[in-house]
Amino acid sequence: MKAERKLGREPRDVSAENKGYDIESCDPGSGQLLFLEVKGRVAGAKTVTLTVNEVRKANNVPEKFRLCVVVVENDVATAPVYVDSAFEFGKPTFGQVSINYSLDSLLQSGVPPE
Image (cartoon, rainbow, N blue to C red; front, side, top):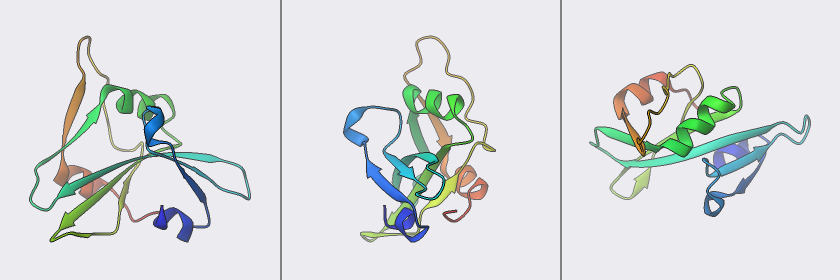
């Protein structure tokens, strides 16, 4: 939320609404929405798990979806890394409920908040 406000956008927590993302962030100038899924991982973790609902949202609006990865070490969170549609989230298969991704791959594919 803090990173989005620094960028001049107006974020809103929608995590309790099960939309496939945690934050809707609006650019007040254009009215454009971004959909942000936030994943916090402890330092040293190997994977990040996205639910099928989150992956579907990423695939349905790739130009507006950002996966925000935050690494936490000694109770201190690093700056978020934004992973956008350039990262291939893939398509869920029948019966699949979640998909694991390499934390290192996501961090290497990501950029600072923008």
